[in-house]
Image (tube, rainbow, N blue to C red; front, side, top):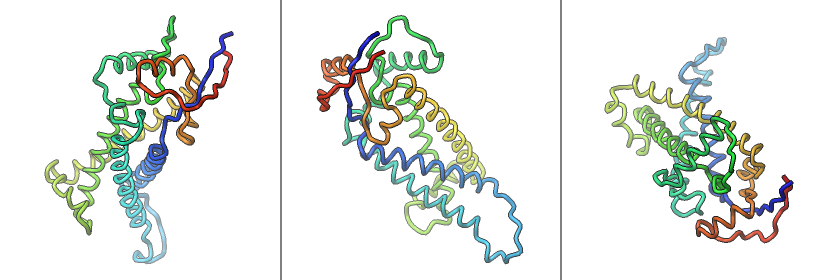
Length: 250
């Protein structure tokens, strides 16, 4: 048996955790209400039409949540410049040799489920691995598509300046139909990403046992001493603040 010492490392700061859960809530609400708007169910009632405003309520929830999603994204962009190493925009920059090496490793282990004859401790990421980082960049671009197309569609009915800034989007892309199609298709890409993301989070939590799930609640992950020492030697992170180590027998 091999005994390893793990230290608790503060990875996800409070604003990042807030962003994550607000984003998860917003995407869920936007997807559900958006699909209802795209294909509203027929509801039979003997009430006057003026007394039934359920579809208007759905639209209001969708628009209100869109604002939450938008300003939450602005906050995350800001924090990528003032937050720690793990939330910095540099952690999502894929154009370096080390990141591409990790990308190939994650594809090999996560996608093809291949075992390595000689595991390298450097391949275990403390923050986002390279595949996750690149996928979040793509997700951010998809979020921009949703913001531009969504506010573009809403601009004609909006009463204040922010949505009206996107009034040029609909004529630029060729009309309401194509913009709604892009907006709807991108929603399904968000749903696909969410399913894969949830699966991989629980997969890594089971595979590595380092608190992948709980870290997005409390902010801490458990990292083995060997990995931490290598990062400190390479001056990638500062020495861990948690002096106590936890021993795990493998």
